[in-house]
Image (cartoon, rainbow, N blue to C red; front, side):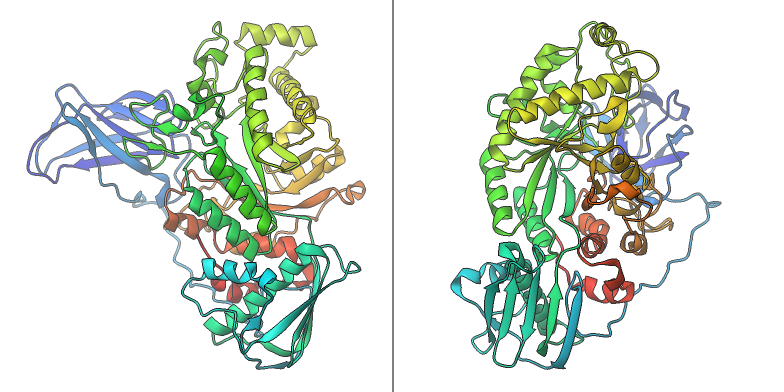
Length: 607
């Protein structure tokens, strides 16, 4: 139940015609509401009509009670994220507070912060595979050749107020390539006169230099840490894929912040940015041949084709990345060993595309024939409409031109169970292909995804997708990489079906989940609560089938942005759990230690 009280704290009477608000906890239909009438809901945007002639005098209140909700709110952040009144004079923004629990709701006590502890005063995260220090107390700082200063520049961008890691009195670093080391691996030998850095290839060199930069930064900024005078560190990555998914569709982030995310990932010795560029709530990549995608699909607002969502004001939000910006980001990532894999989500989650190009819908299909789990009507492109493939050919031409990644992520997730079943064109296609029964939607989706897989193959690229890409007969496993998100067990299921997999279960690695059960927490809870201990302690290799050797390519943290409407909230939700994912992706299980991790995590950079 929601109880809203809108109090007029001004000096004049307000004539209200409607209350508009957005909330991740949505009104369930048929709506049971007192104090207002249900008018519409699109996604998370709601409009409740006021009684005729409704006026709120100074000091008076308008009380509304909503008795039907999609789910009980679990914490203070799951109430109204934004709200305004519609009046004859225009929209009036409302100052909203956190959701307050009913008096009968249990409220867990606040647990004391866990600060962690260290036994070895070495500032490194992820922790190395082997570290032996014989003597401490070296002068902080290193001397680098001019061709190695990219890491010093990275440190300066991430910590502009910290002392420099470069010092004329520092020890010189002597790099030597050693192909006998594991790929991406390095060895640091500390001696009083110099630091020897053996590495396997450019990635190993970069990893070794970042490790050195972390050690020195810790010693310069925190008295708990020191620099080895004599010792040896041997290190290499556990997984080839060490990634972070970044949603910029639900809430747009300026390109400068995405550049900083690249820097943060490099500092964590991660190597993949999965860039989620399109969804129902916004199309964020310029496609010059289809300008309407960003002219219409990148805008939300009461006067736009897409309604405001989440914490939007009535004016909504807008934003997209030009091709020039995207290419510059790819180049920035390449300099730091971060591959940017784009995601153009399909066939579902495309309300933004369909708002820009409504001609791609089956005109014979009822406009409200199905709804996605997020509440969007008819949000999937239709696999029976030839023009859909023509448009997506154009989109992928541009995507493949911008992004050199061999993998292009095409989504494939959360297609509503009743999608296309009221479309005469889709049903004719299903009949022609021999699809029938309860899984007709899954079979049509698999048909669509296989066509898209062929489209990528003609461009020399491979398909990446969410785990639903294996449903309904699935896409070919050859060259395909699937991301297991729906459950912990999905990783093993996909491997048994022959797919290479990145483990990213929402129950452990989704960083928009609430940290704990407390009412005072923030975040979503569909995957349960995900405290840092759970993210850090989750072992993705447990329960894998015997024939799965080599198919677990890596792990990835998921940063979904519905509730991440500010930089402060982004940091509060993402950290320190992103650092926990980074250490799990790099460090072998026997080398992990949660108490040490919690001591080191506060030194890591944030957005």
